[in-house]
Image: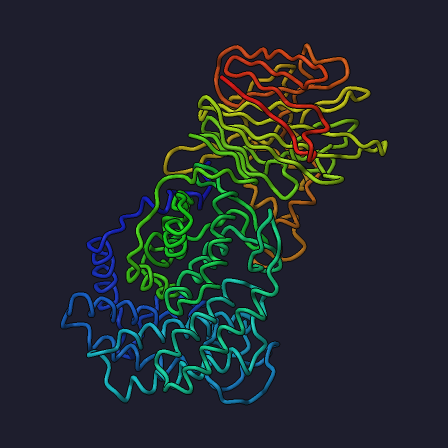
Length: 609
């Protein structure tokens, strides 16, 4: 079984003017064949996310005409624009819409579904999208749209802006991507207004960003991020927010959008494995956007100097939104327009700067969460998630069912590179059930193809073991395949255990259920509205790699040693004295300094091959 949306890296999509012209040519032929007598360009199967879709295809036709001057397109643009203005602009309140601040304003908005009162909750983002489609058409209207029709569209776009920012609560779904998209719409609209009105709209857009988005950013892994559906980040919508920040900076030149985009980009870079896999978020834990992410990832890959394009997207949406038959849906057309207009090139090499929440070299990478426990490990083509035991999730020593990985104090980190090796030492103070403060020192070393993990903790009573991950997926090149095992070797006994597959709060990696499906099944709200991360936290047990203490551990320590990847014998040797803990493997020697650290309490580490 393959993961349905973890497909190819987005920087592998053709990214030349000729490639984009071919995309627009295909859209043109589809649109001209689809255009109804009424002027609609909606996909025949479209029933939701519909209020902006015809106008989106219109904007793509306008861009195609500006680039190629196809004589068939002016009439199609005018007819389809007339259809939107006549049939898809609503001015009567949608029955049941809960987020209005003023009723019966007569201001225009776009509907998520056309039937009155059927599903009004989506009208706010649908109107944001319609505003973005409208300003793109205005940008591309020169020589194509008659003055009267252009003036009507400008008036409707201004009405959309007022409905979004005056008639309703701003960002009612607490979705950062939607909110930043609204700001972008205001910034782009301002360029089509008289100077006094333009300045007012521009200032309002920036104030909304600063006061309602930036001021409410959420912290995760040392970064402040625009909140997404109640969480700090979502791996579907987060990169879309990055694209909106790129467009906001392109349009306005305001430093705040570049600075916040840099922060979000570095965060994404740290949480992504080298192979581009990521999961997690309050909306879709494994569903990835496609072309909607390209603008932001490409724009900020150049700014931060890292290969963000390795992000695995849903390449079925490689160029534009499509329905099940693969035919164009105009819902995200504004992003394709901007992607084509932007000339930034991909930065294709990794950043060489150490990142606190990531260890990466060659084909090995470890992404660390806020606690500095791995959130995702990639080695030898296999991806490992944090395993679960007794509703505790992570990587670390387990004693009597208690996982020692939750910090009780400051977590210290030391990064070292030497002799072709890259290492990270993490020192975590923890408290167990016995309320005794202990220090877990986790050393991660990689040569770019294998990953060695050594965990040291003061001698524990009983029979502890190391929870060393949940093998979840393997890289097949252009797709990720579900797995339930990996190439892992331990110095002590290594067990691969599986929980009861029939319990919904147990995750057995041998089944076909994906992490996303299991997480939504445990969430409190329906799929699409619930928080899968919250649901996943209810997971009691999972498939898990469990490593016994390593032979030859010093008397005062429990040591666990695991190697991910490689088939050579693995028999590390250890020595512990007042100068530190020495670890010798077939590939390196590391010396972890005394627990007290240096003069500032920071951990000490030396490493050589």
